[in-house]
Picture (tube, rainbow, N blue to C red):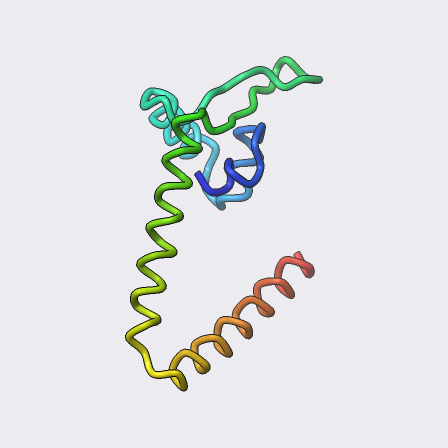
Length: 107
């Protein structure tokens, strides 16, 4: 859902590629989300053979609610750590993010 929140109107093929799963797998996931009313499908604006997917209003609301809960939980956990542990975690997170960015640029 995060991918659709950040990139609405994404094709099934693009979703599968970005998520690193097979087309049938993402199709089943999207179908389940659609049955639950969390995503909507519509034809691509330029190529009617391709359908694009976006979060429904309910899907957006659920995504935001879950993201806010995740942030609150993260803050609660961080608040229990020593400042030097937080500093170490931030340093590791920065190295991780840099590594991911470098990998994305090289692929």
